[in-house]
Structures are given as structure tokens and as C-alpha cells.
Amino acid sequence: MTTVFPTARISLPARRTLRLRLGARPSSLSLAQSRLVARSLEREIPDLAIDIVPITTTGDQITDRPLHDCGGKGLFTKQLELALLEGRVDFAVHSFKDVPVTMPLVDQSQLMIAAVPVRADARDVLVSAVASSIAQLPKNARVGTGSLRRKSQLLAVRPDLRIELIRGNIDTRLNKYTTRFDAIVLAAAGLKRAKLFDPSSMTPISANVVVPAAAQGALALQCRADAPEVRDMLATLNDPDTALAVAVERQVIRLLNGDCHSPIAAHATVKENQLHLRVAVARRDGTPPIVKATIKTSRAKAYSAPALIVRSLEEQGATQLLQSYPNVAAIPFDPACANESQG
Image: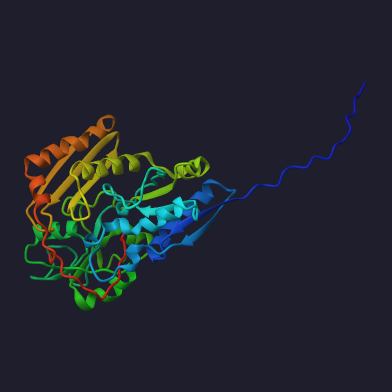
């Protein structure tokens, strides 16, 4: 006997579209980074749609003095973090090197870094129409940078260089640097993410010569700690090797009590279950001498590396260097440019 079941009309629920609001600074670089992350998330989660919400930060508004004199790079993240806490956005994308290690400007107890995507090129880049290396720069060349870390390491290689402050977004710096400088130094990651890297006038500087800043080239995806659904979505972009390397670098800054006046460079790489960490420290005003240390250890022992390398640096006098009184005129200020984080 054949049994025929009655046909029933089944109504399937409509496919749900999730929407997230991504807070981003209105600079071309920040928007480029945010779009990259948004596209990656939308590929990972097909039902997800992301709206970018531009938010101007204090760092974007200060144009008349160096950032390390008025709060440091945390000024690039403060308004974004406040927007998160106030529920105006669901997550934010930061250049991780802009996220303060010590003395954050916003209470972090209700915020979390949910993911650290694969790192871009962590190196610095020499931008010059007259030289393809630091050694090739003319004698007494004018070099523009807003970084005490870069300044100290450049002077360690070429004491004759005249290091002067340059600020402004990447486009402004690239358009105007040839009229004021023989070269400028920018982060490779920012140039490449903004699709502005030009090999005819831009040369990456070896990390052995100029050690990058902690977390340079890495992004931090931040959300509220009480938003598990957002956290889990962001976590799909997390890269464990990058997250480990950045955590180690930032721990070095923490152990050295670094702040926005501290010319501390820290760069870690993870390859084949080995971690290689390189650190450089200069005088507080961004002038030589420089003390350096390196360490190589297994991935399993990675979190012990910062304490070991800091001990070596302290034996070389790093603490005394970092406590030396800063020369406020160490990098002469060029007011022609506004401010911008460079990735």
C-alpha cells in the first residue's frame, strides 16, 4: 500500500542580512584600511553588510605641534573608542601602532581587540628623488619624519642628516616633499594599502637598519567586550602569527615603560615555530646613542622573550637613555602639513 502525505506549503524565513557600523577616520589611508577589512569580512560572512561611519579624531585636528607633545598617537584612536562605548559604531579598525600600550586615553575595561589580521609590510620606506638608500643621500640632506624612533636610527647611520618634522596625510607628504626635503620616511604598509607605493622613488629600508615600530604594518579590529556576535565575526580575520608577534612587541614597550616620547623600536617575526625579536632604544629626544638587542626562541616560549630582551637592553643602559630629558626642538616643526598616522 502506498501512503501519500498531504502536501504542505512551507514558508522559509527570508535570508537575514546583518549590518555592522565600522568607525573610521576620514583620512584616505584610514578609509582604505577600513574598506579592505570590510570587504574581507563580507567575503567571510556572505550575509554581512558593513557601513563605514567617518569619525574625525583629535589627532586629525592638531596641526600646530608634534603629537608626542600633546598626548601621543592615542589621539588617533580616542574618538573612535568613545564612539564604540557610546554605541554609535559596532567596531573600529586602527593602525595597531596607534593604539597606546601604556596610558590609554580611554578606559579599556569595556573594549577588546577581537582580531589582528595578517600583517602588511612592517618596514619603513625611504622616499626620495635623489637616493635609493640612506647611504646615497647627499651630505647634510634634509629628511622629513615625525618619528623620534626613525630620527634616532637615521642619525645612527648618517649623523650629518638634518632631520625635520613633516606631517600631513600621505598624499600631502608625497606631493610636497620634493620642495622641502631630499627625502622623507613613511611606513610601507600605509603606502601599499593606499596604492601609492612607487618603486621608482621609494625603497624599503631593511628592518636590520631601521627597526620598525611595535605593531607597525598590523591592524587592530576593536569592538565592545559585551558584543560577542561582533567579536566572533571579527575573529574570522585573526592571524595567530601576527597577533603573537604584535603582542610580544607591545610587551617590550610595556616593560620599558614606554610612552609617546619613547623612541623604542620592536619588531618580531614568527616563522616555522620560531620567534625572532629585534629591539632598538635611543635617547628620549630621538638622538643616538642607540642600544640594540635580538633574541630567537621557540614559539612556545615567545611570551618569555620580552623580559629576556629587556634585561639585555637594561644592561646596556636603555633605562637611562629613555629617562634622559627630551630636547623639545629635537625635530624642528614644519607647520605646512596637517597630521596623519602612516600605518
